Structures are given as C-alpha cells and as structure tokens.
Length: 192
Image (cartoon, rainbow, N blue to C red; front, side, top):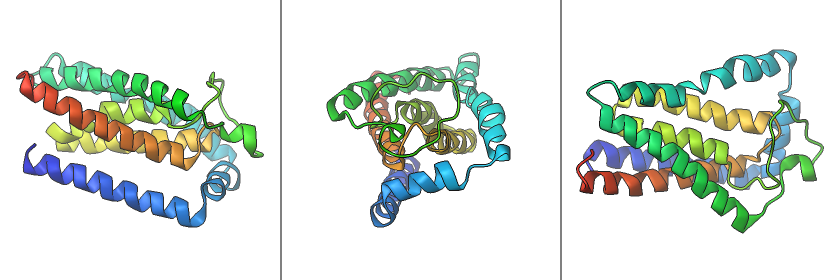
C-alpha cells in the first residue's frame, strides 16, 4: 500500500469514527428522523429521485469506460469490488437482521424500490463505495467525484426512509475493508 493509499484509508477510518461518534452522541433515530422527516421538501424529493439517483449510474459508468483506456485494470478492480461489496453486505445483513426504519419509526418512504426486510448494513451504500473507493485509491481526482456521489447515495437511502445512518456508516466501513483486502489480492496477482 502506497503512502497516498494509506492516507486515504486513515482518512476514511477517521471520518467513520467521527460519524459514528455523532450518531452515538445524538442518536441514530434522531438523525434519521431529522433527515427523513424534518429535511423533507418537494424540492429535495425531486432532487433525490430525479437528479441524484440517475447520477448514481456514473459510479459504474466511469469504471466501465476505464475498460477501454490505459486504466483497464482499475476499471476491472472497481467493477468487481462494487458487486462483491454488495453480495458480502447481503450476507452480513442476514447475520444482524436489524429492521428497517419504516418498520420501527414513523418514517416516510420515497421511491418504488423493493426492500429486503433488513437494513444493516446498507448494501446500496456498499455497492456505491465499492465502486468509488478503488478509483479514489488510484485516480484521486476522479475518485473524489465518485466518492462524493457515493456519499450522496448514503444520504439518499436515509432521506428516502430505507436506512438508518448507522447502516450507511457500517456500509462504508465494510466496503473500505473489502476494497483494501481485494486491493492486496489484485496487487499480488499483478492486476494493479
């Protein structure tokens, strides 16, 4: 792991620790209700459903386009990492079996999506960060943009009522861990 990659990992972990402390001190339910109910507006509903969600496709489109450039291996790494994070997230979700916010709180849900019965961790966030973190490690400028989109995914799944903040934070943590493990594997076999 190069110096820059170590810094990224440290910054991600420190950010997650900070976010976890905020959630612990204020309360997961309070933060969820603030984002889901108190921030709710027709403008934000429109932005999340009609602008943010279509933008999320860029998290997979940019790595796909890398397959046709000198960054082919990075594209492969990102396109493999995202789905692996998602699949492992579903395994983790079945272990914890935490209910969704709309099952335990007066939450509003937005959007036509199917939701599994469990919320922890957010597999949608895991997919997004699974695509973004590999690019952040190797192509920082593009990676920062994808990381921003991944954070918008995290915000959106809370705003739309499908996840608690802790679900998103855990999703980011697990994705970072999975990506860094897979990075070692990809480096070992000479793909990065």
